[in-house]
Length: 379
Ligand code: ACO
Image 1 (cartoon, rainbow, N blue to C red):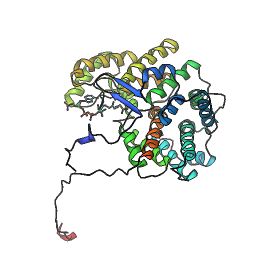
Image 2: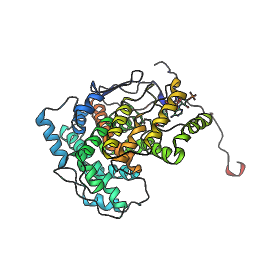
Image 3: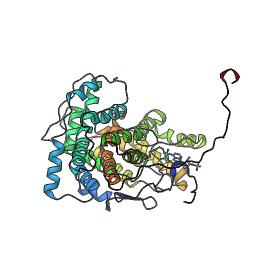
Image 4: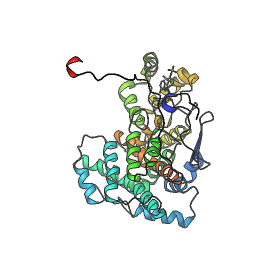
């Protein structure tokens, strides 16, 4: 074996082979199983897209209906999980709550039959079905309320917004939310998916796989950036006049501007383009957001100052403004991302099982050798 060059963050180093999704960062292209994300956002639904990602092809009518039915009938949480959640501190971050709940599913459904397609199917259904219920339940419980039961007459996205806000959403709002889920469902081997793959490669259960991915997604350099974008727009910039000085200050201090830059995209993220359009449609229907103009100006100035480095708006830049308009609290933006990305993590889990080899990379040791043990009194 030849010794490879070390690259921080494994930039550009293939860690797996996959047929699930494809990104062309120079052209701003994203495909799921060869279909452009723009087309799926326009014509598909999140559950149909999830089926496509996990099983590799678009479902026939009856296959989709069965998948939707199964998910609908597994949305409820065991009362013990609800009781466990009641003990979580109200001030805790919902991503931490979600990670704990996803891991807890392994306690209740612990049979680990990774070579049994029925087990795989049940795990996929259970995780896609229950994660939204967990996110919504934590939101109500931290306000001191009991969680409300899912409604079988509502589809996946409408039901989530209903469980979260205790109000049946307008169909347009539910549609926009569903498109957001489709857009965030998969994105090749990013940090959380890599985390899922490493965990999956040990042949542990899928609940541990998703729990480890949720923990990874939570960081501000990954899924957590959408939350930070709103904080930046509201608290750190606040007015259009402050945009340029803010950008200049960040550049001078070498600070990252949240919602910009991407390891792969060197042009505007295609998902950011769709999310911006969705944001505009929402504002037209339900009223302006005072921070949208600031966001547009920020994008313009960042492009002017950092475009030459390939720094453009990423998926997290406009998603927060969309979620805000849908009544989703800021600290639930990343859990909402996790609801969606569960589809991608599960697709990679299933693919990894097909040709598994445990991840065990090497390292370049930079320490010293043969050091003596120094007794306590001589240190
Ligand atoms: N603001 C200002 N400058 C930036 C930004 C940014 N958001 N992103 C990258 N740069 C600059 C860096 O300062 C660096 O400049 P230099 O070469 O002069 O030192 C250069 O671009 C390369 O940056 P890296 O940090 O090396 O790029 P990397 O590929 O490691 O990081 C990342 C990508 C983490 C997304 C980075 O762009 C970032 O931190 N962005 C802000 C956080 C964010 O929005 N994360 C969400 C990403 S999408 C997702 O995970 C779902």
